[in-house]
Image 1 (spheres, rainbow, N blue to C red):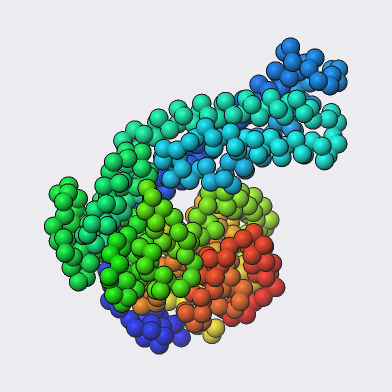
Image 2: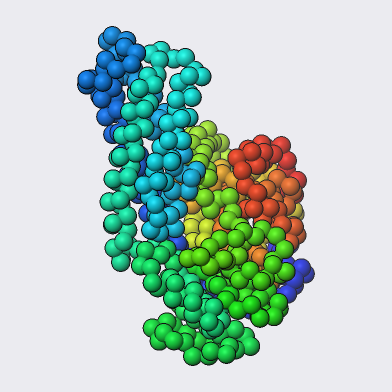
Length: 499
């Protein structure tokens, strides 16, 4: 029989009545995607500037008075002969910039030594490019003078472009969306000093938007800045949602551990970062990293692998290629099994279902229909079971071999999903899951996948929720390309609990 989510939670945990937060409805996605969009604009600008600089370096080295400098270049050398060097050089310099985290929102907005950052990055790239020319012998050979000129022109071009880009970012309308919004917990001198340091620097990548006391109250109960939105501690969830908070910063070292744990759990459910003062080493047992905000040491949970733009770009590139290839290769199977589905149960062969993606954004997921058209006529929502009477005869076969998932290559191609990631769930289920199951919402910090680490380990459909979550969180915390490759291979080899 059908296994509903209410029955599941009663069996495996505590069912908590909860309302739908705006993260359930995806209302924070636009705001949280803004830094990534700014980074992509900067990346696109860098790509154009680098390409122009490398083309200019070609002209300077082979078409100007520099032609006679050093080793005489081969006669009849054309731009097409150097095209592969220019393309490879542009791509590799972009990779170095991304690896040095020069597309992070904090780097883009914060005032710092941009000249030295650009110089050091270009010097590193130039040395690597020169080593490439010495290690590999191509025809025509890569001119070392060209590498030196390209490094110099890239330095000048990137610095000039990034200075112009920085001036645009300083526009209040842009900077306000780029800054991370902080809610301070604790009205004390430490919190006041922290807020003052941020407000003194208009180029700071953070902004304090609210201030609440600790659960026990604070000595200085009245905020010194009436422009900040304040409220009692028990209203903190409403403030997090109303103010679109990105970071909750606990600025009081005397808060009991139980309150700190509860605050951390709240932040996880609302998909916001939780940071504390260093005295809380005892309560955070793993995954810590220390950072400074205007000289103030802050502890936070380490950044996840897919928080880094370079990793996201690599994974997205693989998704685009894999999604396109997968869609082309699976088209005959979609047609063939679509006909079999229609013969057994006339009606739409594709099944659209609202699912929750990264940062709580909803999307329409596609599947080949494996159930009868009236499968959910009773209004109950849940997973199919091994002997589900609603399933079509062809449905068991296509689910066992994951054929019902192949239309999701389209979801991957348009950016709703990834090839590999935690399987997306329905918003109606997540309303209760995120309150009844600790750490459940952490799986929504990455894009959902066609297949996932939990699924290839036999945890799909009507299986233990906590075991599935454990595998999903392992994937989120330990993501790398080899893990994605291993998961994709195991998808075709393991079919445990397919139903």
